[in-house]
Length: 486
Ligand SMILES: Cc1cc2nc3c(=O)[nH]c(=O)nc-3n(C[C@H](O)[C@H](O)[C@H](O)COP(=O)(O)OP(=O)(O)OC[C@H]3O[C@@H](n4cnc5c(N)ncnc54)[C@H](O)[C@@H]3O)c2cc1C
Image (cartoon, rainbow, N blue to C red; front, side, top):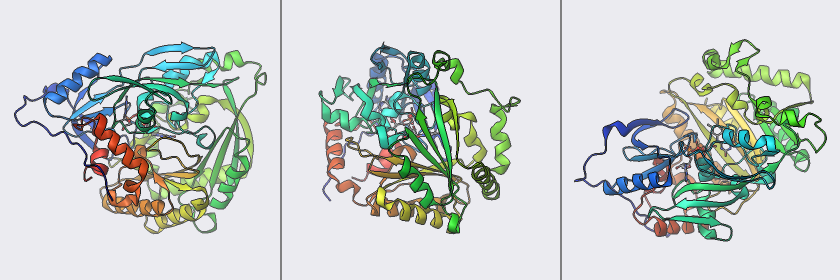
C-alpha cells in the first residue's frame, strides 16, 4: 500500500505556555472518553484566525468542535487546542421563497427549523438529535431517516466557505473547488473550518407528519417492511430489540413517515408555528423530563433493558399496524425527549457502533452481528436500522445498503472486551465491502479497516490534506488514532 506521508505539527518546546484559564475537560458525547484541551470559542472569522495564529506560535494542532455530539473522539484534541464554533450562530441570509439559507457553523438544527418552519420549510436532513451544529453536521456529512431517498446533508449543501490553515477563506461548491467541496464535507474537520454553509431546505405543507408503526417479528421481516416502503415513504427507521434471540432475532418496530400533501392540513398556519412543535417539558403531564434519566438508571443494565425492550415490542405487536399524525419534532427527535438520557448508562458511559453494509449483505451480516453480540454477553441496549444510498463525498459512509447503529454500555469490567468485540464486528463489516462512520466510532484501529487506506478516494483525501494543511494544523484524537501511523 502506498500512502502519502502525513504532516504532523508538534509542540514547540521553547514556546510560552497557553493561558491556564482556557484549559478545560472536553468530553466525547457518550461519556466514555475525555481529554484536557485549551479551548477557545471565537464568535467571528477573525477570532478563528487569532486562535490559529496562537496555536501555530506554540506548535500546537487545532481540533474543531461543534456541539460535541459525536459519540467518540472525533471532536477531541488532547492537550492541544480545541476550537469550539458553538458561538457562531448567526443566520447570514434567508430567502423564504426559494428556501435557500446561509448560516454560520454554530447554528444548530433546532435553531434552523425554528427559524424557517413558519415559512413552510424544513431541513432536508436531520439527525436523531436537534442539538448538533451545521458545521459539525457538514464535518461528518450526517444522514437522517430519509438517507436512502435524499442522501446525506452534503447532497443539499449548495456551497460552503472553508477557512484553511493558512487563514484564507475559500468558497467551495460543485462548481468552485469541487475537490475541496467533496473532500471537506464529510472530511471530519481535517481540511479546514466551515465558516458559512449554504443549504437548500425542503418544502413542507404542514407542521405535522403522518406516521405508520409496523411491528416486525424478525430481522427478515423488518428488512422486508423497509423494502415494501422504499418507493412511498419519506422516512423509515427501525428499532431493534438486541436481546431477542432465536426466531425473533432482529425483531422490533418500524416507523415510516409521510409528508402531508398541500391542502391536507387545514390548520397548517398553526401547526407550522414553532410553539406547536416544541417537546413538552413533562412526561404524562407531571414528571419533569429532566428527572427521567434518574428513573431510567436502575433499568439500564442487561435484565432491565431486556425487560423494557420486551414490553415495548409486545405493546407494539399488540397494537399491530397503526397510523397517527404528530409534529415533525416529535417524530424526528425522539432522543431529545429525555434530556441527558445518556447519564442513565452510568459512569462508564456508552459507545455507538454503526455498521454500514451493502443491501444484499444486510440480513446475514446483521443476523451474525446480533447473535455474536448475544454470545459475547455484549448486547446493544439500542439498535437502529436505516437504509442509505451512495453519494459523491470522498470520505463518505454512504452506500447502497443498510446501517445498523448499536449503543453499548461501557463499564470498567467490559471496556477492553467491548473494544475487541467492536474490532471483530468492524472486520466483519469491511469484509462485506461495508463502511464505518467516524461520528459514531470510538474503537476502530487501522487494522480493522481492511482495504480502506488503499482506496483511491482515501488516497486523494490524504494528498489534499497534505496540500492544504502542510503543517498538520487540523488534528483530533480520531485522526491520530486512525491516520497517525501513515
Ligand atoms: C443522540 C444522537 C443522535 C444522533 N443521530 C445521528 C443520526 O441520526 N445521523 C447521523 O449522521 N449522526 C447522528 N449523530 C451523530 C452527530 O450527528 C454527528 O456526530 C455530528 O457531526 C455532531 O455534530 P456536532 O455539531 O456535535 O459536531 P462535533 O461532534 O463537535 O464535531 C463533528 C466533526 O465535525 C468537525 N467539525 C465541527 N465543526 C466544524 C466546522 N465548523 N468546520 C469543519 N469541521 C467541523 C469536528 O472536528 C468533528 O470531526 C447523533 C448523535 C447523537 C448524540
